[in-house]
Image (cartoon, rainbow, N blue to C red):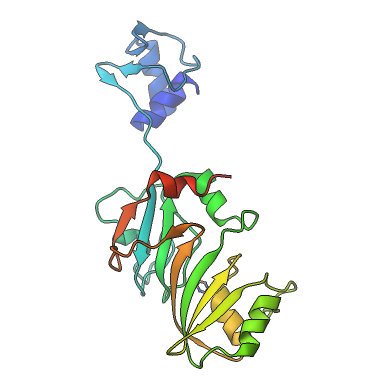
Length: 231
Ligand code: URA
């Protein structure tokens, strides 16, 4: 990365300020004052501006237990947004991987690492997602078969990928999807003549919602959880 770009990333200064700081000999690389703002610097170089050693901000990776009533958007005039729940951090640059409907609860993954977000949510990587649905009527054998075979959703031209629906006591069902179409779980049950009354996401890929997180709480992902989405 160019030195002036590094300085701007590390400090938040505009690029022309970073260039000026180099020109004014305020910047050293590995102890040597440098004058070339285009110098290429790498991970092992020690870069100082005046008396301060600079470091690039580290990307953030979070899991949030989304409560009902919050919108998965970065702004919304009418409703609270999930970023409002991240009370002790600067939410600038954070984005959501795989949105949930306003009334859906459960596991939400957030980061400011664009490539990682893409790996989590791009259809090409097909990370499975585990949901628990509370239904108007118990899921029947026909529903289980249609989920497994793939079914046509209203207004779409390709059937859904094979999905697993496991009926549970009390009109509940566990649903495992390999894709993430708009309102997919609700629309799949609607296509089978049923209705989802409540929906909770428990897992995305290998990352499971931490049972110690109350609705609205969040924590950083572990290294292992982050790495589970590597290509
Ligand atoms: N499917 C839905 O219908 N809603 C969600 O929030 C997630 C998956």
